[in-house]
Amino acid sequence: EFYSSIDSMQDLVKVEENLINATRLYLEAQQKQLYIYSRFIQQIKQEQKSARTLPNLDEYLEHPLHSFRFLKRFVYDWDTLILGPIVNNNPREEFQHSVNDLFENLGYPNSSEVQGAVKGLARLQKVYNLTASHLADGAIHGLLYESQLDWSDCYEIGVQLFDIGDYSKSEEWLEEALILLEENLEMDHSDLYVSDIREYLALVNFELGHSNRAKSLLNENSAQLTLKYLENSRSREILEEGDFPWFANYSRLCQGKRLPEKQDNILKCYLDGKRHAFFTLAPLKVEQVHLDPDITVYHGVLSSKQISSIFTESNKKERIRSGVAGENGEDRTVKDIRVSQQTWLNYSTPTMQYVNRINEYICGLTMRGAEEMQVANYGVGGQYEPHPDYFEFDLPPDFDGDRISTSMFYLSNVQQGGYTVFPNLNVFLPPVKGSMVLWHNLHYSLDVDARTWHAGCPVIVGSKKIGNIWMHSGSQTFRRPCHLISDRHKSLAYRN
Ligand SMILES: O=C(O)CCC(=O)C(=O)O
Ligand SMILES: [Fe+2]
Image (cartoon, protein in one colour):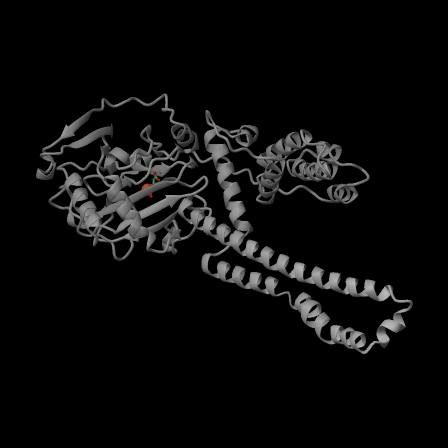
């Protein structure tokens, strides 16, 4: 799968470079062949011409050398120079071979990839309130980009959205396609394309329950079949999904707007040289972003060099599409609520040993039982919808307690979008390369803290990379002891 990670999309750049090379070789070989064919034809023409200068053709053939050459031409030349090569078409065979090898080694996207990318665009529209026309113009959430979509791109997006049943967005994109196409009416076949788009728009309107508008879009002559279809069908039942209760807060925070009704904590930024001897000379740069539950950003924890070394390691591993824990103990599954790819890194290289240590020093917890670092990369519209990091019921068998804390290292900046948000806590965090965010998913009592639901907002522009370390509660008894009075009541209101 390519669309769910920018790193994977970069592999596709290699595929295209290889395709260009193979095509160039094919063209050169074919041109050489064509040159041989036409030179041969010219030679024959030349001979025929000189034959025609004689009073009659028989006289030409009566000459023994002429008749020899004439026959030889059929038996050998036509065969080896023209008939064989044209039938065998070696350049085409070679092209086929190299393309097959390429697809086998690097892969090739299929239509589900386009669908994934279209779903990503639709997600951006929804979370960031973007219109199709702004997106097509490259105007995204207040920034204007060079890249734009033409009518055929918009048409394709509209068709894909129709196929997945997102009719109102499909209508928006098809309308945009029509507007853009009407600016290009001098183009060949533009009237055919206009009627194609109108037919799709009719189908969309039909499914949306606007039958009259649907019929008015169709031309009685050219769209008879579609008209007949509409007259004899009933629109599909639209399963109005309705938004999740968290959606409004989530979308607002993703857009970098605070929630009005929430009261702010008084927060501080400070340097901390005392947390561990390691920080004596280079104090930790601490930014509080929420208190109780505490969410803290530690700035400048990893250098660019260390981050590059993390990528060197993670690039050696296979990237897999991120999953989510299955419900009721089922296996992990792939769902649109989490669109990214990931690998896991152990703590054996010098950089990863450093990550291990600095994480312990900052958290004050032991890495005993901690999971390997999960390195994730988000692609087009990549995201992770609100979720908790704790497991609560279906604790994996190899876990020594639940995920007591999350240390999330930002391994890249993101040009636009991709904030980490906590919808219950009025917190949004733009990724800052080299920083680490820390919070506890469990209360001191070790009950889960539902206030910590959080999300990775869809990436608008950029390649978001993060590294997560989850520490487990099993061995933290003396590192984070419980209080005399249980603190579990604090999150009860947030549990469903
Ligand atoms: O991408 C983000 O900002 C959040 C990621 C996350 O919550 C996770 O991987 O569990
Ligand atoms: Fe998470």
